[in-house]
Length: 269
Length: 343
Image (cartoon, each protein chain N blue to C red):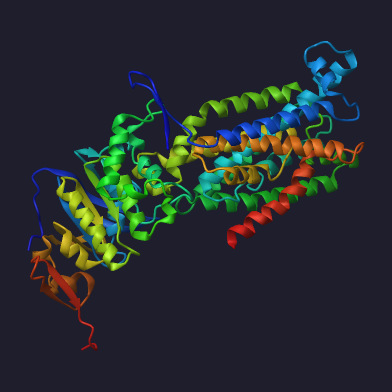
Protein backbone atom coordinates (compact mmCIF):
# COMPACT_ATOMS: atom_id res chain seq x y z
CA UNK A 1 0.00 0.00 0.00
CA UNK A 2 1.28 3.41 -0.96
CA UNK A 3 0.76 5.89 1.81
CA UNK A 4 3.29 8.36 0.50
CA UNK A 5 3.35 8.93 -3.19
CA UNK A 6 6.01 10.90 -4.91
CA UNK A 7 4.86 12.46 -8.10
CA UNK A 8 7.53 13.74 -10.39
CA UNK A 9 5.66 16.65 -11.94
CA UNK A 10 2.67 17.58 -9.80
CA UNK A 11 0.30 19.98 -11.53
CA UNK A 12 -1.70 20.61 -8.39
CA UNK A 13 -0.36 20.32 -4.87
CA UNK A 14 -1.14 21.41 -1.36
CA UNK A 15 1.25 21.94 1.54
CA UNK A 16 -0.04 21.66 5.09
CA UNK A 17 -3.40 23.04 3.95
CA UNK A 18 -5.72 24.06 6.78
CA UNK A 19 -9.20 25.47 6.30
CA UNK A 20 -12.62 25.54 7.89
CA UNK A 21 -15.71 27.55 8.60
CA UNK A 22 -16.06 30.19 11.32
CA UNK A 23 -12.91 29.31 13.18
CA UNK A 24 -13.79 25.63 13.22
CA UNK A 25 -10.96 23.76 11.55
CA UNK A 26 -12.16 21.08 9.17
CA UNK A 27 -9.08 20.57 7.06
CA UNK A 28 -6.21 19.73 9.34
CA UNK A 29 -3.00 20.16 7.38
CA UNK A 30 -3.30 18.30 4.10
CA UNK A 31 -0.39 17.54 1.76
CA UNK A 32 -1.59 16.33 -1.61
CA UNK A 33 0.20 16.02 -4.93
CA UNK A 34 -1.78 15.49 -8.11
CA UNK A 35 0.13 14.50 -11.23
CA UNK A 36 -0.56 15.62 -14.78
CA UNK A 37 -3.33 13.50 -16.29
CA UNK A 38 -4.23 11.74 -13.06
CA UNK A 39 -7.80 10.82 -12.15
CA UNK A 40 -7.94 11.24 -8.38
CA UNK A 41 -10.98 10.43 -6.24
CA UNK A 42 -11.36 11.96 -2.79
CA UNK A 43 -13.37 9.66 -0.53
CA UNK A 44 -14.19 9.45 3.14
CA UNK A 45 -17.11 9.67 5.56
CA UNK A 46 -19.36 12.72 5.82
CA UNK A 47 -17.55 15.63 7.43
CA UNK A 48 -14.08 14.19 6.74
CA UNK A 49 -13.09 17.32 4.83
CA UNK A 50 -13.01 15.97 1.27
CA UNK A 51 -15.36 18.67 -0.05
CA UNK A 52 -13.56 21.30 2.02
CA UNK A 53 -10.26 20.23 0.46
CA UNK A 54 -11.74 20.51 -3.03
CA UNK A 55 -13.32 23.90 -2.29
CA UNK A 56 -10.10 25.24 -0.83
CA UNK A 57 -8.12 24.12 -3.87
CA UNK A 58 -10.84 25.74 -6.01
CA UNK A 59 -10.46 29.04 -4.03
CA UNK A 60 -14.10 28.94 -2.88
CA UNK A 61 -12.61 28.83 0.61
CA UNK A 62 -9.51 30.65 1.79
CA UNK A 63 -7.05 28.50 3.74
CA UNK A 64 -6.27 29.51 7.30
CA UNK A 65 -2.73 28.30 6.69
CA UNK A 66 -0.79 26.36 4.10
CA UNK A 67 -0.71 26.74 0.36
CA UNK A 68 -2.46 25.27 -2.65
CA UNK A 69 -0.43 25.49 -5.85
CA UNK A 70 -1.47 25.10 -9.45
CA UNK A 71 1.45 24.79 -11.88
CA UNK A 72 3.69 26.15 -9.14
CA UNK A 73 1.61 29.30 -8.54
CA UNK A 74 -0.25 29.88 -5.27
CA UNK A 75 -3.93 29.52 -6.13
CA UNK A 76 -5.07 32.12 -3.60
CA UNK A 77 -2.50 34.74 -4.63
CA UNK A 78 -2.95 34.49 -8.40
CA UNK A 79 -5.60 36.53 -10.26
CA UNK A 80 -8.72 34.38 -10.21
CA UNK A 81 -9.14 34.62 -13.97
CA UNK A 82 -5.62 33.25 -14.55
CA UNK A 83 -6.50 30.27 -12.35
CA UNK A 84 -9.75 29.81 -14.26
CA UNK A 85 -7.80 29.39 -17.50
CA UNK A 86 -5.97 26.41 -15.99
CA UNK A 87 -8.47 24.88 -13.56
CA UNK A 88 -12.24 24.43 -13.87
CA UNK A 89 -14.74 23.60 -11.16
CA UNK A 90 -18.06 21.81 -11.22
CA UNK A 91 -19.75 22.63 -7.90
CA UNK A 92 -22.04 20.14 -6.21
CA UNK A 93 -25.19 22.20 -6.72
CA UNK A 94 -24.74 24.83 -9.41
CA UNK A 95 -27.81 26.89 -10.29
CA UNK A 96 -29.53 26.47 -13.63
CA UNK A 97 -31.33 29.66 -14.65
CA UNK A 98 -34.79 29.13 -16.11
CA UNK A 99 -34.78 28.89 -19.87
CA UNK A 100 -31.00 28.93 -20.31
CA UNK A 101 -30.20 26.71 -23.31
CA UNK A 102 -27.55 24.02 -23.30
CA UNK A 103 -25.41 25.94 -25.77
CA UNK A 104 -25.66 29.12 -23.69
CA UNK A 105 -24.64 27.24 -20.55
CA UNK A 106 -21.67 25.59 -22.23
CA UNK A 107 -20.66 28.97 -23.71
CA UNK A 108 -20.33 30.37 -20.16
CA UNK A 109 -17.31 28.10 -19.83
CA UNK A 110 -15.49 30.53 -22.12
CA UNK A 111 -15.82 33.41 -19.65
CA UNK A 112 -12.18 33.42 -18.43
CA UNK A 113 -10.92 33.53 -22.03
CA UNK A 114 -13.09 36.47 -23.04
CA UNK A 115 -12.84 40.20 -22.50
CA UNK A 116 -15.28 43.04 -22.98
CA UNK A 117 -13.64 43.76 -26.34
CA UNK A 118 -13.27 40.16 -27.38
CA UNK A 119 -16.47 38.41 -26.45
CA UNK A 120 -16.56 35.66 -29.03
CA UNK A 121 -13.82 34.19 -31.21
CA UNK A 122 -13.25 31.15 -33.39
CA UNK A 123 -11.54 29.50 -30.44
CA UNK A 124 -14.67 29.99 -28.33
CA UNK A 125 -16.86 28.54 -31.06
CA UNK A 126 -14.60 25.50 -31.47
CA UNK A 127 -14.23 24.86 -27.73
CA UNK A 128 -17.99 25.00 -27.15
CA UNK A 129 -18.72 22.70 -30.07
CA UNK A 130 -16.04 20.19 -29.08
CA UNK A 131 -17.20 20.18 -25.47
CA UNK A 132 -20.79 19.47 -26.50
CA UNK A 133 -19.62 16.76 -28.88
CA UNK A 134 -17.45 15.06 -26.25
CA UNK A 135 -20.31 14.97 -23.75
CA UNK A 136 -22.89 14.02 -26.39
CA UNK A 137 -25.23 16.93 -25.75
CA UNK A 138 -25.18 18.40 -29.27
CA UNK A 139 -28.57 16.89 -30.06
CA UNK A 140 -30.27 19.12 -27.51
CA UNK A 141 -28.01 22.15 -27.87
CA UNK A 142 -30.89 24.59 -28.20
CA UNK A 143 -33.18 23.13 -25.54
CA UNK A 144 -33.44 24.68 -22.07
CA UNK A 145 -31.19 22.90 -19.59
CA UNK A 146 -34.03 22.75 -17.05
CA UNK A 147 -36.10 20.65 -19.50
CA UNK A 148 -33.51 17.84 -19.49
CA UNK A 149 -33.16 14.81 -17.22
CA UNK A 150 -30.72 14.83 -14.32
CA UNK A 151 -28.08 12.84 -16.21
CA UNK A 152 -28.36 14.95 -19.36
CA UNK A 153 -28.13 18.07 -17.25
CA UNK A 154 -24.97 16.83 -15.54
CA UNK A 155 -23.42 16.14 -18.95
CA UNK A 156 -24.17 19.77 -19.92
CA UNK A 157 -22.41 21.05 -16.81
CA UNK A 158 -19.43 18.81 -17.52
CA UNK A 159 -19.45 20.22 -21.05
CA UNK A 160 -19.27 23.71 -19.58
CA UNK A 161 -16.13 22.81 -17.59
CA UNK A 162 -14.64 21.20 -20.72
CA UNK A 163 -15.32 24.34 -22.75
CA UNK A 164 -13.26 26.21 -20.19
CA UNK A 165 -10.35 24.31 -21.77
CA UNK A 166 -8.26 23.77 -18.64
CA UNK A 167 -5.67 21.18 -17.70
CA UNK A 168 -7.33 20.51 -14.35
CA UNK A 169 -11.01 19.94 -13.57
CA UNK A 170 -12.33 19.70 -10.00
CA UNK A 171 -15.71 18.04 -9.53
CA UNK A 172 -17.68 18.03 -6.28
CA UNK A 173 -19.84 14.88 -6.08
CA UNK A 174 -20.83 14.82 -9.75
CA UNK A 175 -22.84 11.60 -9.38
CA UNK A 176 -25.00 12.49 -6.39
CA UNK A 177 -28.77 12.32 -6.99
CA UNK A 178 -28.34 10.35 -10.22
CA UNK A 179 -29.62 6.84 -11.00
CA UNK A 180 -27.02 4.08 -10.88
CA UNK A 181 -26.92 3.71 -14.67
CA UNK A 182 -26.49 7.47 -15.08
CA UNK A 183 -23.77 7.47 -12.41
CA UNK A 184 -21.87 4.92 -14.50
CA UNK A 185 -22.38 7.00 -17.65
CA UNK A 186 -20.99 10.07 -15.91
CA UNK A 187 -17.99 8.14 -14.54
CA UNK A 188 -17.26 6.68 -17.97
CA UNK A 189 -17.41 10.14 -19.44
CA UNK A 190 -14.97 11.37 -16.79
CA UNK A 191 -12.62 8.44 -17.49
CA UNK A 192 -12.67 9.31 -21.16
CA UNK A 193 -11.85 12.94 -20.34
CA UNK A 194 -9.00 11.82 -18.07
CA UNK A 195 -7.69 9.49 -20.77
CA UNK A 196 -7.40 12.49 -23.07
CA UNK A 197 -4.83 13.97 -20.74
CA UNK A 198 -6.85 16.18 -18.40
CA UNK A 199 -6.29 16.01 -14.68
CA UNK A 200 -9.40 15.27 -12.65
CA UNK A 201 -9.91 15.58 -8.91
CA UNK A 202 -13.34 14.29 -7.96
CA UNK A 203 -15.10 14.11 -4.61
CA UNK A 204 -17.13 10.91 -4.59
CA UNK A 205 -19.61 9.51 -2.13
CA UNK A 206 -19.93 6.16 -3.80
CA UNK A 207 -16.94 3.98 -2.90
CA UNK A 208 -17.41 1.48 -5.69
CA UNK A 209 -17.42 4.18 -8.34
CA UNK A 210 -14.13 5.52 -7.02
CA UNK A 211 -12.74 1.97 -6.90
CA UNK A 212 -13.80 1.24 -10.47
CA UNK A 213 -12.62 4.39 -12.25
CA UNK A 214 -10.00 6.38 -10.32
CA UNK A 215 -6.24 6.11 -10.88
CA UNK A 216 -5.81 6.91 -7.24
CA UNK A 217 -8.12 7.08 -4.26
CA UNK A 218 -7.35 9.53 -1.47
CA UNK A 219 -9.04 8.39 1.73
CA UNK A 220 -9.71 11.10 4.30
CA UNK A 221 -10.83 11.10 7.92
CA UNK A 222 -11.03 13.96 10.42
CA UNK A 223 -9.60 16.50 8.00
CA UNK A 224 -6.52 14.50 7.08
CA UNK A 225 -5.44 12.03 4.42
CA UNK A 226 -5.07 8.61 6.05
CA UNK A 227 -4.54 6.30 3.07
CA UNK A 228 -3.96 6.81 -0.61
CA UNK A 229 -2.97 4.80 -3.63
CA UNK A 230 -4.31 2.76 -6.52
CA UNK A 231 -7.77 1.42 -5.62
CA UNK A 232 -6.61 -2.18 -5.93
CA UNK A 233 -3.97 -1.63 -3.27
CA UNK A 234 -5.68 0.96 -1.14
CA UNK A 235 -9.25 -0.24 -0.77
CA UNK A 236 -9.15 -3.15 1.65
CA UNK A 237 -11.32 -4.39 4.48
CA UNK A 238 -8.82 -2.88 6.93
CA UNK A 239 -8.72 0.61 5.38
CA UNK A 240 -12.53 0.69 5.09
CA UNK A 241 -12.83 -0.21 8.76
CA UNK A 242 -10.20 2.39 9.60
CA UNK A 243 -11.58 5.25 7.50
CA UNK A 244 -15.33 4.67 7.50
CA UNK A 245 -15.71 2.40 10.53
CA UNK A 246 -17.41 0.12 8.01
CA UNK A 247 -17.27 -3.65 8.12
CA UNK A 248 -17.16 -4.76 4.50
CA UNK A 249 -15.93 -7.56 2.31
CA UNK A 250 -13.67 -6.42 -0.51
CA UNK A 251 -13.70 -8.60 -3.62
CA UNK A 252 -12.12 -8.20 -7.01
CA UNK A 253 -14.11 -7.58 -10.16
CA UNK A 254 -12.95 -10.45 -12.41
CA UNK A 255 -13.24 -8.28 -15.54
CA UNK A 256 -11.41 -5.16 -14.43
CA UNK A 257 -9.31 -6.35 -11.50
CA UNK A 258 -10.75 -3.45 -9.52
CA UNK A 259 -11.92 -3.89 -5.94
CA UNK A 260 -15.61 -4.03 -5.12
CA UNK A 261 -16.78 -3.54 -1.57
CA UNK A 262 -19.79 -5.24 -0.15
CA UNK A 263 -20.87 -3.90 3.23
CA UNK A 264 -21.72 -6.60 5.77
CA UNK A 265 -25.43 -6.23 6.18
CA UNK A 266 -26.14 -9.14 8.47
CA UNK A 267 -27.06 -8.64 12.13
CA UNK A 268 -24.34 -6.90 14.12
CA UNK A 269 -21.93 -9.33 15.73
CA UNK B 1 -28.59 31.54 -31.82
CA UNK B 2 -25.98 34.03 -30.67
CA UNK B 3 -25.26 36.93 -32.96
CA UNK B 4 -21.68 38.05 -33.10
CA UNK B 5 -20.31 41.26 -34.43
CA UNK B 6 -16.59 40.94 -35.14
CA UNK B 7 -14.07 43.28 -36.73
CA UNK B 8 -12.26 42.05 -39.84
CA UNK B 9 -9.05 41.29 -37.97
CA UNK B 10 -10.91 39.47 -35.23
CA UNK B 11 -9.36 41.74 -32.61
CA UNK B 12 -12.75 43.01 -31.55
CA UNK B 13 -15.88 40.95 -31.21
CA UNK B 14 -19.12 41.62 -29.43
CA UNK B 15 -21.95 39.24 -28.61
CA UNK B 16 -25.27 40.80 -29.54
CA UNK B 17 -28.52 39.84 -27.86
CA UNK B 18 -30.28 37.06 -29.76
CA UNK B 19 -33.80 38.20 -28.93
CA UNK B 20 -35.82 41.05 -27.55
CA UNK B 21 -35.43 43.67 -30.29
CA UNK B 22 -39.16 43.59 -31.09
CA UNK B 23 -40.16 44.06 -27.46
CA UNK B 24 -37.58 46.82 -27.12
CA UNK B 25 -39.13 48.69 -30.06
CA UNK B 26 -42.65 48.27 -28.71
CA UNK B 27 -41.68 49.50 -25.24
CA UNK B 28 -39.88 52.49 -26.72
CA UNK B 29 -42.97 53.36 -28.76
CA UNK B 30 -45.22 53.05 -25.70
CA UNK B 31 -42.87 55.31 -23.78
CA UNK B 32 -43.02 57.95 -26.54
CA UNK B 33 -46.83 57.84 -26.49
CA UNK B 34 -46.89 58.36 -22.72
CA UNK B 35 -44.37 61.16 -23.03
CA UNK B 36 -46.54 62.97 -25.57
CA UNK B 37 -49.58 62.37 -23.37
CA UNK B 38 -47.75 63.76 -20.36
CA UNK B 39 -46.77 66.88 -22.30
CA UNK B 40 -50.20 67.47 -23.87
CA UNK B 41 -52.67 66.53 -21.15
CA UNK B 42 -53.60 68.37 -17.95
CA UNK B 43 -55.51 71.38 -16.73
CA UNK B 44 -54.03 73.29 -19.66
CA UNK B 45 -54.56 70.78 -22.43
CA UNK B 46 -52.68 71.13 -25.68
CA UNK B 47 -53.52 69.58 -29.02
CA UNK B 48 -50.90 67.49 -30.76
CA UNK B 49 -50.39 70.32 -33.23
CA UNK B 50 -49.77 72.74 -30.36
CA UNK B 51 -47.30 70.33 -28.75
CA UNK B 52 -45.45 70.09 -32.03
CA UNK B 53 -45.49 73.85 -32.47
CA UNK B 54 -44.09 74.31 -28.97
CA UNK B 55 -41.36 71.75 -29.44
CA UNK B 56 -40.30 73.32 -32.73
CA UNK B 57 -40.31 76.75 -31.10
CA UNK B 58 -43.20 78.51 -32.81
CA UNK B 59 -45.76 78.77 -30.01
CA UNK B 60 -46.96 81.41 -27.63
CA UNK B 61 -45.28 82.07 -24.29
CA UNK B 62 -47.91 80.41 -22.09
CA UNK B 63 -47.60 77.07 -23.88
CA UNK B 64 -43.82 77.34 -23.91
CA UNK B 65 -43.68 77.89 -20.15
CA UNK B 66 -46.07 75.04 -19.39
CA UNK B 67 -44.27 72.62 -21.69
CA UNK B 68 -40.63 73.47 -21.10
CA UNK B 69 -40.65 74.53 -17.45
CA UNK B 70 -43.13 72.03 -16.08
CA UNK B 71 -44.32 69.18 -18.24
CA UNK B 72 -41.18 68.07 -20.06
CA UNK B 73 -38.93 68.04 -16.98
CA UNK B 74 -41.71 66.30 -15.04
CA UNK B 75 -42.15 63.67 -17.77
CA UNK B 76 -38.41 63.14 -18.07
CA UNK B 77 -37.98 62.95 -14.28
CA UNK B 78 -40.71 60.29 -14.07
CA UNK B 79 -39.11 58.23 -16.85
CA UNK B 80 -35.59 58.53 -15.46
CA UNK B 81 -36.58 57.75 -11.87
CA UNK B 82 -38.52 54.72 -13.08
CA UNK B 83 -35.61 53.48 -15.19
CA UNK B 84 -33.09 53.95 -12.35
CA UNK B 85 -35.25 52.18 -9.76
CA UNK B 86 -36.00 49.37 -12.21
CA UNK B 87 -32.33 48.75 -13.06
CA UNK B 88 -31.45 48.99 -9.37
CA UNK B 89 -34.05 46.30 -8.62
CA UNK B 90 -32.88 44.10 -11.50
CA UNK B 91 -29.28 44.14 -10.25
CA UNK B 92 -30.36 43.52 -6.65
CA UNK B 93 -32.55 40.60 -7.71
CA UNK B 94 -29.77 39.08 -9.78
CA UNK B 95 -27.25 39.48 -6.95
CA UNK B 96 -29.49 38.03 -4.26
CA UNK B 97 -31.14 35.54 -6.60
CA UNK B 98 -34.37 36.62 -5.01
CA UNK B 99 -37.20 37.92 -7.22
CA UNK B 100 -38.65 39.82 -4.26
CA UNK B 101 -35.58 41.98 -3.73
CA UNK B 102 -36.30 45.67 -4.19
CA UNK B 103 -34.39 48.79 -3.18
CA UNK B 104 -37.42 50.05 -1.27
CA UNK B 105 -37.63 46.76 0.60
CA UNK B 106 -34.11 46.80 1.98
CA UNK B 107 -34.04 50.21 3.60
CA UNK B 108 -32.57 52.35 0.84
CA UNK B 109 -35.73 54.39 0.33
CA UNK B 110 -36.44 54.57 4.06
CA UNK B 111 -32.88 55.76 4.71
CA UNK B 112 -33.35 58.61 2.26
CA UNK B 113 -36.81 59.31 3.66
CA UNK B 114 -35.69 59.39 7.29
CA UNK B 115 -32.87 61.78 6.42
CA UNK B 116 -35.24 64.16 4.65
CA UNK B 117 -38.08 63.91 7.19
CA UNK B 118 -35.81 64.47 10.16
CA UNK B 119 -34.25 67.46 8.40
CA UNK B 120 -37.67 68.97 7.68
CA UNK B 121 -38.89 68.46 11.26
CA UNK B 122 -35.72 69.36 13.13
CA UNK B 123 -34.50 72.15 10.85
CA UNK B 124 -37.60 73.63 9.19
CA UNK B 125 -35.48 76.39 7.69
CA UNK B 126 -33.34 73.91 5.75
CA UNK B 127 -33.54 74.81 2.06
CA UNK B 128 -35.75 72.32 0.15
CA UNK B 129 -33.37 72.51 -2.81
CA UNK B 130 -30.80 70.56 -0.78
CA UNK B 131 -33.22 67.74 0.11
CA UNK B 132 -32.03 65.47 -2.71
CA UNK B 133 -28.51 65.64 -1.33
CA UNK B 134 -29.76 64.78 2.17
CA UNK B 135 -31.82 61.91 0.79
CA UNK B 136 -28.86 60.53 -1.16
CA UNK B 137 -26.59 60.62 1.87
CA UNK B 138 -29.25 58.97 4.04
CA UNK B 139 -29.91 56.22 1.51
CA UNK B 140 -26.22 55.42 1.06
CA UNK B 141 -25.59 55.47 4.80
CA UNK B 142 -28.35 52.94 5.45
CA UNK B 143 -27.13 50.73 2.60
CA UNK B 144 -23.63 50.81 4.08
CA UNK B 145 -25.03 49.88 7.49
CA UNK B 146 -27.02 46.98 6.07
CA UNK B 147 -23.98 45.81 4.11
CA UNK B 148 -21.74 46.02 7.18
CA UNK B 149 -24.23 44.06 9.29
CA UNK B 150 -24.73 41.36 6.67
CA UNK B 151 -20.96 40.98 6.26
CA UNK B 152 -20.67 40.06 9.90
CA UNK B 153 -21.27 36.49 10.94
CA UNK B 154 -21.19 33.44 8.81
CA UNK B 155 -20.68 33.34 5.06
CA UNK B 156 -21.72 36.02 2.59
CA UNK B 157 -25.27 34.96 2.16
CA UNK B 158 -27.17 37.32 -0.12
CA UNK B 159 -30.40 36.50 1.69
CA UNK B 160 -28.96 37.98 4.87
CA UNK B 161 -28.66 41.32 3.11
CA UNK B 162 -32.38 41.29 2.32
CA UNK B 163 -33.51 40.13 5.75
CA UNK B 164 -31.33 42.64 7.59
CA UNK B 165 -32.49 45.30 5.13
CA UNK B 166 -36.14 44.51 5.86
CA UNK B 167 -35.51 44.69 9.61
CA UNK B 168 -33.67 48.01 9.32
CA UNK B 169 -36.28 49.47 6.99
CA UNK B 170 -39.17 48.72 9.37
CA UNK B 171 -37.14 50.28 12.17
CA UNK B 172 -36.56 53.37 10.03
CA UNK B 173 -40.24 53.50 9.09
CA UNK B 174 -41.07 53.60 12.81
CA UNK B 175 -38.62 56.45 13.34
CA UNK B 176 -40.15 58.35 10.42
CA UNK B 177 -43.59 57.95 11.98
CA UNK B 178 -42.28 59.19 15.31
CA UNK B 179 -40.85 62.30 13.66
CA UNK B 180 -44.14 62.96 11.87
CA UNK B 181 -46.11 62.56 15.09
CA UNK B 182 -43.96 64.82 17.21
CA UNK B 183 -43.08 67.43 14.60
CA UNK B 184 -44.88 70.71 14.02
CA UNK B 185 -48.02 70.05 11.97
CA UNK B 186 -46.96 72.25 9.03
CA UNK B 187 -43.54 70.67 8.88
CA UNK B 188 -45.12 67.24 9.06
CA UNK B 189 -47.43 68.09 6.17
CA UNK B 190 -44.46 69.20 4.12
CA UNK B 191 -42.62 65.99 4.98
CA UNK B 192 -45.68 63.88 4.13
CA UNK B 193 -45.98 65.35 0.66
CA UNK B 194 -42.32 64.53 -0.01
CA UNK B 195 -42.86 61.02 1.38
CA UNK B 196 -45.70 60.36 -1.06
CA UNK B 197 -43.14 60.20 -3.85
CA UNK B 198 -44.00 62.81 -6.41
CA UNK B 199 -42.49 64.15 -9.59
CA UNK B 200 -44.76 67.20 -9.72
CA UNK B 201 -42.06 69.63 -8.62
CA UNK B 202 -39.24 68.05 -10.61
CA UNK B 203 -37.13 70.45 -12.58
CA UNK B 204 -34.32 70.33 -15.07
CA UNK B 205 -31.76 69.90 -12.28
CA UNK B 206 -33.32 66.54 -11.26
CA UNK B 207 -33.41 65.52 -14.91
CA UNK B 208 -29.73 66.34 -15.35
CA UNK B 209 -28.61 64.36 -12.29
CA UNK B 210 -30.74 61.30 -13.04
CA UNK B 211 -29.87 61.50 -16.72
CA UNK B 212 -26.18 61.42 -15.90
CA UNK B 213 -26.66 58.40 -13.64
CA UNK B 214 -28.62 56.56 -16.32
CA UNK B 215 -26.00 57.40 -18.94
CA UNK B 216 -23.38 55.74 -16.75
CA UNK B 217 -25.65 52.72 -16.38
CA UNK B 218 -26.18 52.33 -20.09
CA UNK B 219 -22.48 52.53 -20.91
CA UNK B 220 -21.67 49.86 -18.33
CA UNK B 221 -24.47 47.44 -19.29
CA UNK B 222 -22.20 45.25 -21.47
CA UNK B 223 -19.71 44.80 -18.61
CA UNK B 224 -22.39 44.29 -15.96
CA UNK B 225 -24.32 41.82 -18.12
CA UNK B 226 -21.28 39.59 -18.63
CA UNK B 227 -20.82 39.32 -14.89
CA UNK B 228 -24.48 38.77 -14.12
CA UNK B 229 -24.66 35.92 -16.67
CA UNK B 230 -21.85 34.11 -14.88
CA UNK B 231 -23.15 34.94 -11.44
CA UNK B 232 -26.54 33.43 -12.15
CA UNK B 233 -24.90 29.98 -12.21
CA UNK B 234 -24.24 30.33 -8.49
CA UNK B 235 -21.33 31.85 -6.58
CA UNK B 236 -19.22 28.67 -6.61
CA UNK B 237 -19.56 28.15 -10.35
CA UNK B 238 -18.86 31.86 -10.92
CA UNK B 239 -15.67 31.61 -8.85
CA UNK B 240 -14.64 28.55 -10.85
CA UNK B 241 -15.13 30.54 -14.04
CA UNK B 242 -12.75 33.21 -12.79
CA UNK B 243 -15.10 35.87 -11.45
CA UNK B 244 -13.97 37.64 -8.28
CA UNK B 245 -17.36 37.11 -6.68
CA UNK B 246 -16.72 39.10 -3.51
CA UNK B 247 -15.45 42.20 -5.31
CA UNK B 248 -18.08 41.85 -8.00
CA UNK B 249 -20.91 41.64 -5.45
CA UNK B 250 -19.68 44.71 -3.63
CA UNK B 251 -19.41 46.81 -6.78
CA UNK B 252 -22.78 45.71 -8.12
CA UNK B 253 -24.48 46.17 -4.75
CA UNK B 254 -23.05 49.67 -4.48
CA UNK B 255 -24.23 50.42 -8.03
CA UNK B 256 -27.71 49.15 -7.31
CA UNK B 257 -28.02 51.16 -4.11
CA UNK B 258 -26.55 54.31 -5.65
CA UNK B 259 -29.01 54.20 -8.56
CA UNK B 260 -31.96 53.86 -6.19
CA UNK B 261 -30.56 56.61 -3.97
CA UNK B 262 -30.29 59.02 -6.91
CA UNK B 263 -33.92 58.34 -7.83
CA UNK B 264 -35.21 58.58 -4.25
CA UNK B 265 -33.27 61.80 -3.78
CA UNK B 266 -34.92 63.36 -6.82
CA UNK B 267 -38.53 62.19 -6.52
CA UNK B 268 -38.95 60.68 -3.06
CA UNK B 269 -39.69 57.04 -2.33
CA UNK B 270 -41.42 55.29 -5.23
CA UNK B 271 -42.15 51.76 -4.10
CA UNK B 272 -42.45 48.53 -6.08
CA UNK B 273 -40.92 49.80 -9.34
CA UNK B 274 -37.63 48.02 -8.65
CA UNK B 275 -39.56 44.91 -7.73
CA UNK B 276 -42.04 44.69 -10.59
CA UNK B 277 -40.22 46.10 -13.63
CA UNK B 278 -37.50 43.38 -13.76
CA UNK B 279 -40.10 40.64 -13.27
CA UNK B 280 -42.38 42.09 -15.94
CA UNK B 281 -39.48 42.42 -18.40
CA UNK B 282 -38.49 38.83 -17.72
CA UNK B 283 -41.99 37.64 -18.60
CA UNK B 284 -42.11 39.56 -21.90
CA UNK B 285 -39.27 37.72 -23.62
CA UNK B 286 -36.40 35.48 -22.58
CA UNK B 287 -33.14 37.29 -23.27
CA UNK B 288 -29.61 37.59 -22.02
CA UNK B 289 -28.73 39.74 -19.03
CA UNK B 290 -27.88 42.85 -21.07
CA UNK B 291 -31.09 43.04 -23.08
CA UNK B 292 -33.01 42.26 -19.90
CA UNK B 293 -31.51 45.33 -18.20
CA UNK B 294 -32.51 47.50 -21.18
CA UNK B 295 -36.07 46.16 -21.23
CA UNK B 296 -36.27 46.57 -17.45
CA UNK B 297 -35.20 50.22 -17.68
CA UNK B 298 -37.85 50.94 -20.31
CA UNK B 299 -40.52 49.09 -18.32
CA UNK B 300 -39.69 51.05 -15.18
CA UNK B 301 -39.80 54.30 -17.12
CA UNK B 302 -43.22 53.46 -18.55
CA UNK B 303 -44.56 52.43 -15.14
CA UNK B 304 -43.69 55.71 -13.44
CA UNK B 305 -44.72 57.99 -16.29
CA UNK B 306 -48.00 56.08 -16.59
CA UNK B 307 -48.55 56.27 -12.82
CA UNK B 308 -47.89 60.01 -12.86
CA UNK B 309 -50.15 60.58 -15.85
CA UNK B 310 -52.93 58.55 -14.19
CA UNK B 311 -52.49 60.33 -10.87
CA UNK B 312 -52.57 63.70 -12.61
CA UNK B 313 -55.56 63.21 -14.86
CA UNK B 314 -57.91 60.55 -13.45
CA UNK B 315 -59.24 62.61 -10.52
CA UNK B 316 -58.36 66.01 -11.98
CA UNK B 317 -58.11 68.64 -10.60
CA UNK B 318 -57.03 66.58 -7.57
CA UNK B 319 -53.54 65.17 -8.09
CA UNK B 320 -52.53 61.79 -6.69
CA UNK B 321 -48.74 61.52 -6.30
CA UNK B 322 -47.11 58.95 -8.58
CA UNK B 323 -45.74 57.14 -5.51
CA UNK B 324 -49.25 56.53 -4.21
CA UNK B 325 -50.38 55.19 -7.59
CA UNK B 326 -47.41 52.80 -7.84
CA UNK B 327 -48.06 51.60 -4.29
CA UNK B 328 -51.76 50.98 -4.99
CA UNK B 329 -50.98 49.00 -8.14
CA UNK B 330 -47.72 47.54 -6.87
CA UNK B 331 -48.93 45.85 -3.70
CA UNK B 332 -51.35 43.43 -5.41
CA UNK B 333 -48.83 42.68 -8.15
CA UNK B 334 -46.22 41.93 -5.48
CA UNK B 335 -48.63 39.46 -3.85
CA UNK B 336 -49.37 37.90 -7.22
CA UNK B 337 -45.68 37.29 -7.94
CA UNK B 338 -45.20 35.80 -4.49
CA UNK B 339 -48.24 33.52 -4.72
CA UNK B 340 -47.34 32.32 -8.22
CA UNK B 341 -43.83 31.60 -7.06
CA UNK B 342 -44.98 29.56 -4.11
CA UNK B 343 -47.64 27.75 -6.11
